[in-house]
Image: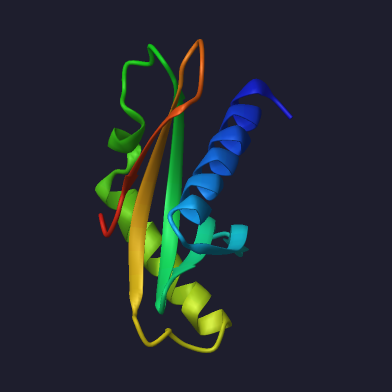
Length: 120
């Protein structure tokens, strides 16, 4: 595993902990649908299915983690959410929400985490 992969894995772990602390249940991590792509975290928030994209950056990076979700990435997330629903028997009663978690790893102390709900 290279340093970039390790940073991403760390960010996903931090994000999953934050979601659980917010009362969500993590159903899956790194769910893949063929060559279409990957959902970082699939969770439940009550009766809502949450597809969560995690972006992690080191402090000092020129781009904020949450700025990394382009319109193309947002469209891919919507498609992956539909694939997950199809593979798992349909949408839950509360529907589907796509969230974004940005993790900024600082030189000292805990990572700074931002959770934006329903961004896509």
